[in-house]
Length: 186
Image 1 (tube, one colour):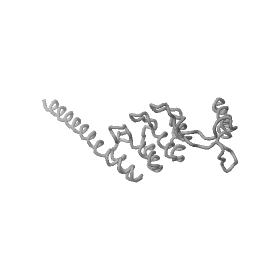
Image 2 (spheres, one colour):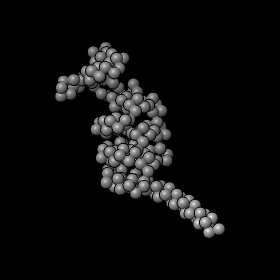
Image 3 (cartoon, one colour):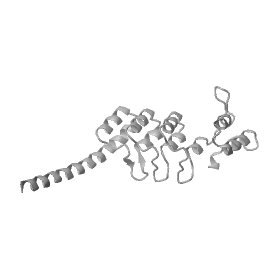
Image 4 (spheres, helix red, strand yellow):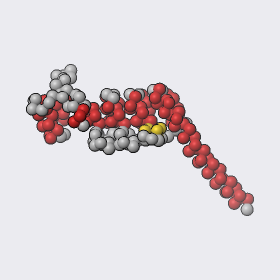
């Protein structure tokens, strides 16, 4: 009889702990969002170490996560911490937007590189069908050259991963099409 009673108490305690654990995670998601917005990587790490969920939704209307917010605001050190703690690199919000797309949209190139290096899907599309690359090149000139004298077409064609894209960009660069990729083409 005592064993049964002890087992019931143990199970009740486990249920209480699991309920409190989810409450604690919900409580820290607001703090997590604030720390991400502030760019406080140390506070983000502390919250995650204390049990905050790196994949918790910070905005229930949009479906935005901490990683998405960090990418939006260009918080590179926070992105690194969130990735270390297992943040979903390809989480899509209600509109299908995702961390890499947010970083590309705001021109946070180092974050885009970090996400790609960590395994982000480069061809992921949002609900409008846009990829991070499409967003990144809005208004981009194909004639701008890097320190090695290479333009975007030279770099894309050197990779030889997509002949069709190389041909298309070459046609743009030659002047057969407009020199500027316009926002309204998206």
